[in-house]
Image (cartoon, rainbow, N blue to C red; front, side):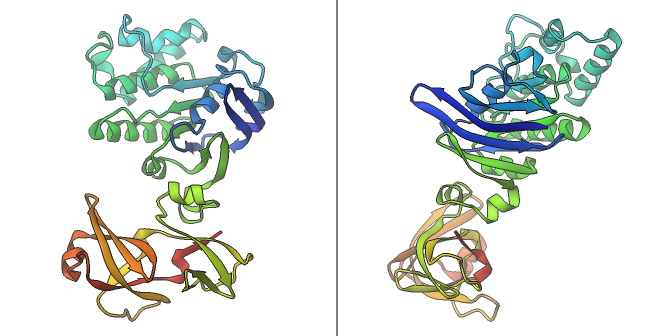
Length: 345
């Protein structure tokens, strides 16, 4: 559906380099990465607002590289909504029809469907002033979808909303995607959002794509130290590999497999590290005595820093487990994890 090949963009000191993406028709695809990674630049290149230096882009087998924005069949919704403040909600939603001709009956049917799906009927005669963030974002979605785009680009649509509105728009996005034939490409720096919405994703960093794949692959099998850190693998260590073991500062960690290289990195998710007072009778092949060096309240969980020899590990545990084990700075506990919880690259 969306095919980007060898795309390069030069914008002063910032560049997008060798971007290659294939997004399937009607897929919900997410582009992740920190602020400044180049995500919005890529979206604006797809929509035709930023000139490219080299490479090509196509939508549904149609080359759009040189087409003006209105000919590309691509809609975009920005995080700041970009609504016309002097127009009513109805006029904002239908504004695109000035540039995309549609049969009157078809336009009315489309409008009624969007108004119902996004619960906008009570807002149509109002102007954007004094509307809530969630309402403004729903109006922006309706305006973008009104002209039947083949592709909808979403630039951080949830980032400026509080928690209640964020859940509301997330549900709307899921419903709109399910009920339409539109391909969604959404930008976010929030990995939790991506997990709840996307089938596949790409991770960008400093103008390049670090990894593309299913959410499970990116979450469980990162290809680089940057991706591992981005998806929350806080236990990230340089390691030497010998047979089926990884060695970090004289600590031997069983992998249950023989890596292809003699050195590289290992990563372990903090939630995969189990703490106990005594050795566990389980399939966990890695177990070490550790000293608690720090405890941090993270809301639903506590993050525990643990020192094994000279290496610090991090574990996430529930409040009940914290009290049951008597976890506090200075005590000794066993730290255990399965060999399958260790990712190496």
